[in-house]
Length: 140
Image (cartoon, rainbow, N blue to C red; front, top):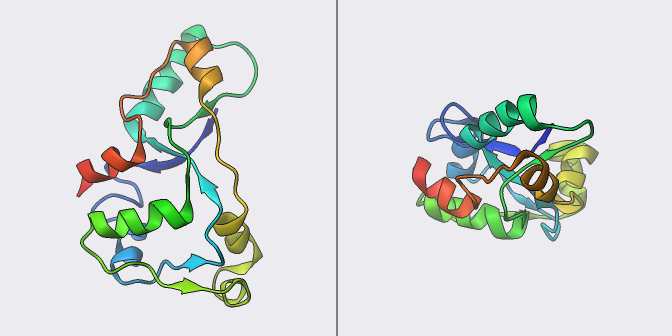
């Protein structure tokens, strides 16, 4: 099971979560062009998919993510708006390397989203929270 970035109660995207606090303080910038694509999954959907895999799964990898991978330049400003926070600042890649290291820059600029089609097909799974957009709004 390969899970997307978790959101929901008790996660870093929850109302008191680490990422939420950083976004509210404008300390979670968009690095470079923000073209890294993130996939998200609500913790309840992840738990359901995990349980289904115990009974119905075949060997192999399953991406447990919602239906809407999104570029950082899309999801991060929308998350800030949901929080009624100022839009995230943008910093160049070179500065991002100093702040977040090379792996952080890659995550923000080169990450590739994941498809949940195999999990939907093999596990007969459908995420209840099909998009991070509506899922984030439920948290805040």
